[in-house]
Length: 217
Image 1 (cartoon, rainbow, N blue to C red):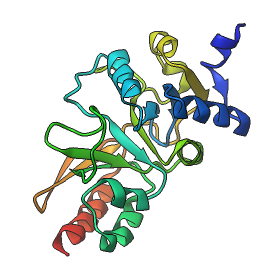
Image 2 (image 1 turned 60 degrees about the horizontal axis):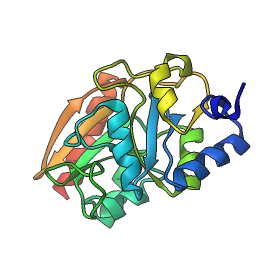
Image 3 (image 1 turned 90 degrees about the vertical axis):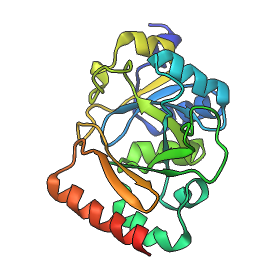
Image 4 (image 1 turned 135 degrees about the vertical axis):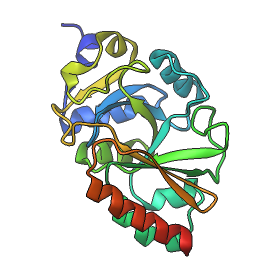
């Protein structure tokens, strides 16, 4: 088996994670596990890499990628959150929630939506968090499937055509939550649940309560 093939199905190990992080920092694209599904991602600071992700997924640029963050504090640097919001964000993240709100920084095309919004998430997954910390705290991501296809929760569910087009892939078996993230939008002091994903009704209610506190402060 060639080295090129190996790097696209690397079993998780600390050394292999370091290798994937290096590829991402240098402008490459990689597939890796999260708590919900396998994601395809790249550095937010590499505009050409973002364009490649859209091309691989056959996804319109108007549908911006999510931004994974290594810890809740990073959200304060990217989105329209205030220091006082941090305690509430720590009750939501790490976890399976993507929060969409107004961006406060300029990101490369595809990292921020046409309306100036950004979608943030801090995954509750040790491998994903370690990769984030090693690769620079933020990654632009989407599920590792063609647009409209099923999001892979196991490495062997990733389409070989997707794997063929990335620079590296980290195999860590099954994603523990086994389903898509929940999505909430915060806009003009209003909250809307866009998708409940893999979370329970009780968890949706808990997050709605927390976000209501966040916008009421």
